[in-house]
Image (tube, rainbow, N blue to C red; front, side):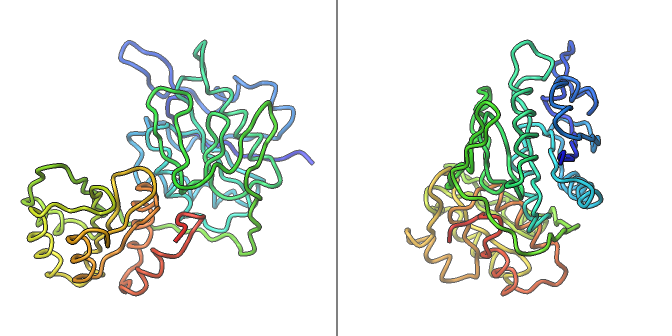
Length: 333
């Protein structure tokens, strides 16, 4: 049977054209597919334009819009391909991994480092590979397909700005590679026993604080006032400078743990955090109820907390349960 796929477009470099002012997303979804005329005879492809943006302008509202679009058409298609800009693609992939859980159908994100109309471009190969992967009966769940590699939606990170090999899989193996139209799987495809579940709420009041040498504590009070969750991207496995300790402890003492959730992670890309290693981190962990990201990517931590904190009146034990629950292999712990 011919596989029926829905191609959702959001703009990004893949759909951009050159202008005197730089690249601007301009191609329609139909124009995008016109660059692959040969693939239309193998699959039944329908398109839908969700938005037409540079991916730096993507917000949590667009993640909800994408999830809603897939929910509306979920039972009408065998799989979904989302064309997306590369700069925030990993965030979108992670967000959709929490908004759409237990999907027995593939939800594939792809894009390009060069526009599809350029003489030299990775767009055609990426789009073709994504369609092939989405049409394969063993594919399911949220993944990124890029430069011939298949990356879990909760494990992807953009690690190169110019190279066609723009994305890496963090603390987790690639699921597969695609070579000459052939899918070579490194991990056996999961068997989804639960029915698909869609969520339609996110709480955007999650703040990322990246520590830098000499950082001043003066902004902590305002950050705690304005946001429901603060993610601290610490040094190394969980190092916090002494200059922040007093004010951080002071702010945390003003709130119940579910009112202002603190998540500790690391700014080091690989291997994860361990706040118990150094004295300040251990004292923080022993004094207050906090969360630790361990081997999760920053993109997964940020979007998972937006998903968790969207639940009204959620308790601290429930926050902990949801955060540490492995969803789409977002953590090995």
